[in-house]
Amino acid sequence: MDIEIGSNLYRNSNGTIEVEGVPQIQLARHPSTGDLLVSFALFDANGRMLAKVVDSTMMFNERRAYELTKTNQSVAMKEAESGKILLHVDVKASDVVSLSRGEFHTMKGRLLHVSPTEWKLEKQQRSGLTQDADGGAVSIG
Image (cartoon, rainbow, N blue to C red):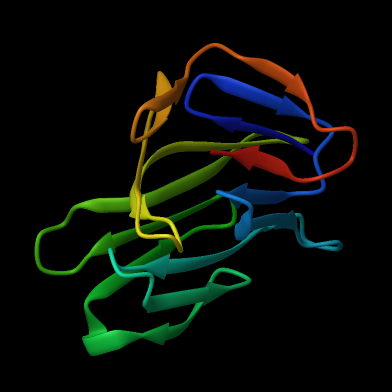
């Protein structure tokens, strides 16, 4: 699977996105329907888990503070009160999935920003990169 994160393309990945060495997002397509399946762990600035999504279904949602919207081809998570988009993933082509927008903390408490043009994690940022993941995880940070 190829994964776009902002304007960066990671080819031949296994669907896992590791942020600061920790698997935080898993992307897959349902084998029979082709639906997008997203698993994601949302943390606060102290590394405490606030919400967890497994196969595009909310499994844990502390204080019901987060909303999940999904179709066969996209999954979005936002803060219920503010409407701020925390994660937006959609299918761009049969084997290309795009993480086009997001703003969430890593397990280590750092804030990751994803925009259509780049990803930024504190002082690290990437834009326009194409990289082969060689069948493994995509690594950020």
